[in-house]
Length: 456
Ligand SMILES: Nc1ncnc2c1ncn2[C@@H]1O[C@H](COP(=O)(O)OP(=O)(O)OP(=O)(O)O)[C@@H](O)[C@H]1O
Ligand SMILES: [Mg+2]
Image 1 (cartoon, protein in one colour):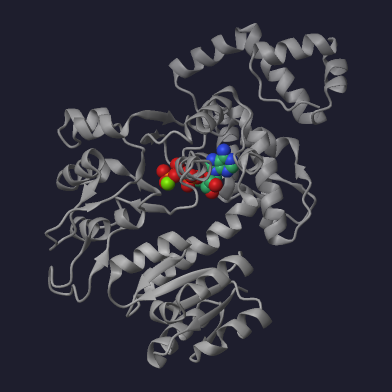
Image 2 (cartoon, helix red, strand yellow):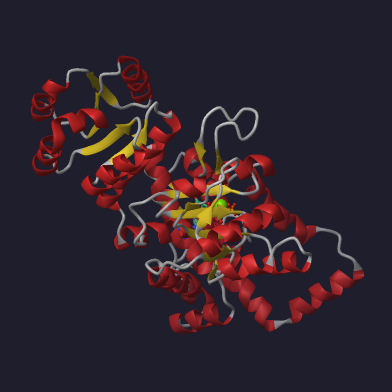
């Protein structure tokens, strides 16, 4: 648990902050008497100090110098009442965070996330972490991984396209984590989930009194992402009005909050994602072409899972391990029949759907191997459906195609090979012996027919 000391002579505000911190699972303490501060910090290990700037100023630079030299790990947020420009300068120079008083708790939460996430991140996120969390060895995924590594540090805007559940958000986060902006914020906005008028004030912020209900100034998400990365999910759903405003942010690097006269400078990298065809939306005049070109400096298209089935076994393994840990289970794999179903299914919900299937199976499995009965009912039904298909009443036309298929030698070979694997697991030697062919012929046929069979 992170330990925080609040230092202020404003008792009321100290209590509000303290309650908020404790509710959010921080262990926090109040210190009203600043002369105690140095002793307190020396005798207990705090992770963060939230301190009134006026108190620091009273002690002049001695205090600053002391903290900087003696407690390099201690993070500091200074609370500022007035003379905000001067405060920003002091904060920037000394590597402090600052917050305006009276404190807006949302803003405090935001800064806390920034500080503590950053600490965690320094420990965990690096290239190796990326390789371990971003699963896939198919040619298409390797290309995407290399592209991510190449472009992360370059500051251009990026457009990620792909069907639902293909990993667009995962890719956006990886780019951010590997970029030079990783110590600043990563802010996600789902443009489809928020009604337009609300989205505008969320993105751009507002000044007190800009509309009824605007009782205090509020920073917009774009401003909160300053120096960091803004992830605009479902960008195809952004209204034309907001598209124009966003374009302004990109072109001139400035924004105007609602009810505000002045323009503010911002420096954000934008990563946008969509599962819609933006070119089509442009034709329909629902998406601005100029904005498209500004966002599409680099495009990453994530292919659907059914086009990279080689990744399925790796993903299954990854998700089994993940859900083993979460559910305290010890599952070692899946049986051949289940694997066969999972390899042949076409995953309209892509990786998210595969993950849900494995999560379900891990929870329901009572064995060390996952079986067909452990799969969600709709996937089980699917294998049943395939069986029913075999016995259904066929039309004359169907019958002919089926008969033609049955006359096709390759089709027959395929069926027999699959049948042998279904019976003997992935024991290639045994399957080859039963079929009366060599292992290398078997291997060649698997390749030739593109059969989804796991290596031994
Ligand atoms: N290559 C991958 N390796 C491991 N996990 C992945 C991979 N791709 C996606 N996932 C996981 O699949 C889930 C869906 O991914 P994500 O939310 O990034 O998809 P999305 O494209 O943003 O979907 P949507 O369009 O529905 O928002 C997440 O739990 C993510 O961690
Ligand atoms: Mg998403």
